[in-house]
Image (tube, rainbow, N blue to C red):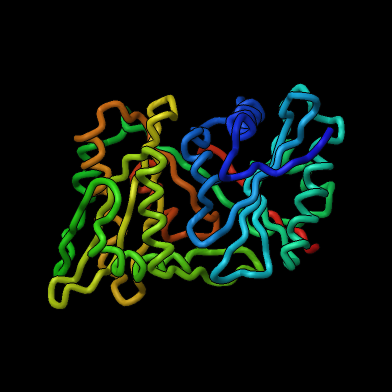
Length: 324
């Protein structure tokens, strides 16, 4: 077995083979999987605000597993995120995962970093693997799902608030250039969400925000976005987004970031934006059956909003940390 890096300029067959191994490893997991097109964009172009390395374990001509590492470039320069570590099911329990982890740790050290972060489904083989290799728990997360076919739409409409002094704007697809400064400001509100020990606040320079919007088109995604704005001075107050990936089967959509800046809280803007976007999605995307969302289990405010909307628990996940 050899471990080799995928060249982002010439990924060849290794990149689709790594995605195939990823799909095979998570085949029994509930919920949508990472789409191939998004996976390929992440490996070849990187994450917003982070450089990405992907490596594969090759046995003969077969890719039997691999990793994806992300290295933040604006903050958190002491850590690397192990976004993917997978081994094909038929090749598990033969030391491949341990070899891939050891290689990933060496790559983190080679970058001059001292902390590895990763995540697994709670109670899974991955969780047991992480615990056995010295990782410690950092943060608990949960995925919740809203079944649009069973949602109480009349009840949801009665829940729709009408905050005085604010208006809601919406757009489909990547944000126009004129909206990027507002998005950069609003993304800063995500720093109020719980994060693991030793993780610094994220920074959102305009170039990273612009790249994040470009990636939407590169990945072929459909994105529904709403923004709350104070009427008196036009100040952006909050935003919420829902993503749809065209090559993810099962009628899934993903509720992504929702944030309200501190100076605008107390007006129920989070609920207003999420419901406004959900109604828009339902009208525009009859093929969408379910919306999935992630939250830290300690984020009681957002959990209360989601549960009031009818989101139900799908599964729980753990964030892990390893000092290297």
